[in-house]
Image 1 (cartoon, helix red, strand yellow):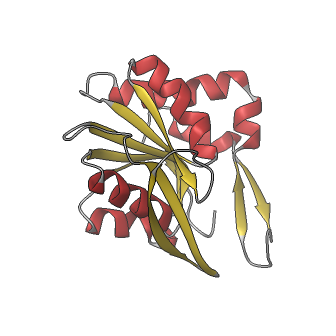
Image 2: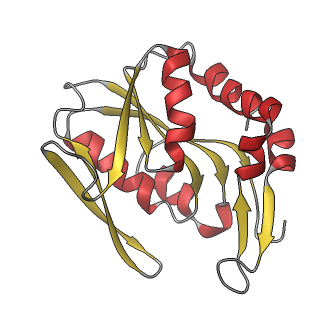
Length: 181
């Protein structure tokens, strides 16, 4: 967790019973609207990764882009979008993953990385971990090396961060929420 983790967590809004009864949605919109909080958020990632030898930030569509772009800029490395199927204009590779209600697919340009590139994957939230694991598989297939997976919010009760660790990837979250919080 970041030194700003408790503060960041306090700015995130919980919306009960959305999108369905019994679900507590963790809304990062207030975090993005608060310039001081957003700066602390980006600083949390910069401080963690500034001394790591990273070649690229791979950010997951779409909220991962919010973190990934300024982080790539601050760290002086490239930014690579991991997009939903059908959004990239060049030759792609894709990975399908399971959602609670079906399947989804993410894509990456086939020339996004060189063999051995060191990649940080970022997204806004880890729930079941499916999207993050699909992105990690794409990066590995393209020749990249996943250094770590990073997120604003971890929802550990849903098991995603445990699944990611079991697959052999390190996980960093600025903050986490349990179901009863």
